[in-house]
Length: 578
Image (tube, rainbow, N blue to C red; front, top):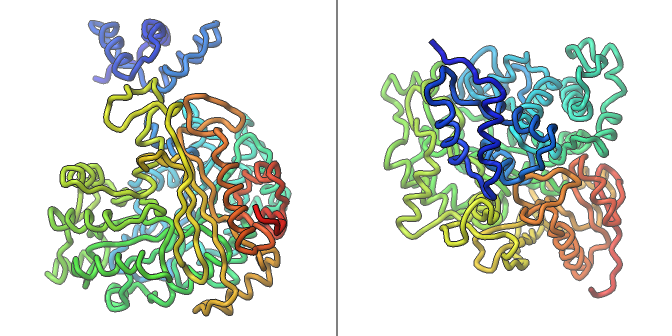
């Protein structure tokens, strides 16, 4: 029989007993709870119950205890990158691909299964975008996270294959949810399915929803969609900008046409080359998915593909998600495995391959994932180790190597404020005393030069912020050169302009107007990086700077002298030597 929930006063008493500590930890809270609850019929308080108790104590006059808030906050990693990622799924829809490894659950978008966390939430909410955004934000905030700076991530396979009307409605509903997050109950005008919303004139239109988000209490500062390389056209690229999209995830899988053909992917290496060139020309951030161990690919094939990914100027993505190929029930690959035509790469052989790949990742790239978020019980065969990344990092450290990607070095992961750890503990230090400087790295990419600027400590262990500056070439021959001209015709402000594709400061997310002397955010790193980027662009002879800004960050760029033009934030650059 399950234990009953503890009364609120028990959670309050637990917190009161650790309140006097300067730097209480989760362990202090748990130890105190164990002493108080021992011998009672109650279970331990849940995180949400602790937060309810904490808020009531504040209402009763207790002073705010920021270090206790840190101890109570669960899964800090969700907002350690400085923003709150909110993942939503589009409705089930026929996919143009026939990939042999994709699961085919009828009630889910292609390649997703209903037991994945984000997919399960979407299914329970009938894929309503408004409800998905609203519920996720409120859940994060109830657990003590700041979620007023939202990184919206739309999953569902091939975004570009959905009806244009649906894509615009889905986008509008996501923004309306963020705009109305303080409403309780929500505005009834925003309720209903696609048809009813369209019948109401979509409550003011998508332009109005995006405009309102510029000053909303919860702002969408980044907007990501995923699609296939062969669906990235000049027209689609232009439409993505008009929706406010800032990052595109491409299912690249492998740079090998033979393997792509064998797995019935339906795309080619040339498709990927063209897609990256078009997206970079418009200033998008580009994230690619790589699938090690798929049919027809040897570990040597995977390694050669990964070398090309960063060694060949046609590719060089900003982010890479590594998804080792697994066999999912109901996929065509499961039939291949039963016939003895395929055996998944796993165990030590897979780990050796992934460690070699991680060691190749340059400092400008981020590796957010090393495994797909499939529940292990739903994988028919292949890697089932959900903490694979931690094991790889430990083994690499033992061997004297390391992944130096942005995720592994972002300040929220490797540098803790003094309240969270001692300076003599491995991987911790006081951010107030860290000495930082700007590092610059240049590399050719898709018809331009990328300048990666980063604020790091002297030993380059921790990244406090970075900026991706693109210096487009007007003379480079591109596979997508004709398409690039269409983009420039639609967005004239990009002609003769350098482009800032991303500006990001790391550290646990703070509220938009919040200051914290022990936090990495809001320390002026953004302004410093912007000024440095402008100086570089000016010296290189560019007449203007264009920023592919998230809707919710436009107000920030206005304070730096930028104005909105053609969906970008733009500033003229004088040609005086800086």
